[in-house]
Image (cartoon, rainbow, N blue to C red):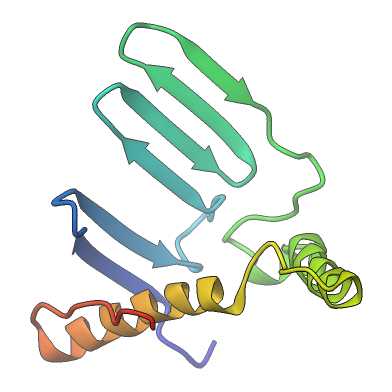
Length: 134
């Protein structure tokens, strides 16, 4: 792959909350994309399409993974295009039905603003604010 394929960043949100971003597609043996949210009442972990929620009071909830969701990071080409296709279908339906799409272009740009800020921070070895929209 002719691109950088490893990023690690510490993030401070406007609320004061902190977060960590680390991403790669080449870590052996690969694995599902994962998001962990740790809060004052519990922890939620989304790995691929599986969700686990564990509350401090002992309750737990789980949504099983979609067995048709595809590969892992070990083979970046093994991912199906179903989820991207769903976004495209919704976009085309939105045009036809004259309604806003579920995912707006502005929401998509938010992700890219974060990526740009992480790359800029790496280039400058310092803090970089994520560009605000609007």
